[in-house]
Image (cartoon, rainbow, N blue to C red; front, side, top):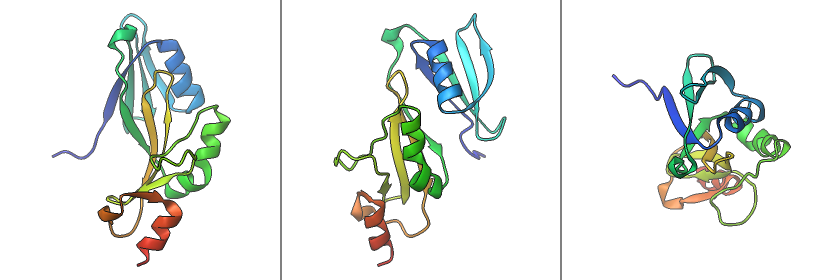
Length: 151
């Protein structure tokens, strides 16, 4: 019965700032806003395929959340970090190496890079990789993944 995730919603502290970020910085398709309810909606991917809702709330009701945008492997490898830096966003990974290189979650396997929105929500670009899952390897660099995925 369940075919996928259609929408997700975030509470934000400043609706106009968040609309600017998701529309003009990330380039999501803006589709609707209701000023009376202080909510805005965006299409993710193709129109009407996936939706993001932003609800303005008082700062004490804004809890940091996490979600990921599905991308192609090449987009993450070749374009994600420059894309984020061009938009004055700081990419980061979970390798604890203080660099901005996408990493691989071997249990999936998937390559990913993280960044934050203006409210500190943790956003992610992710692409599922071909190959056998190697959960025992944890989180590794893409170069390390290439070495272990061939073995």
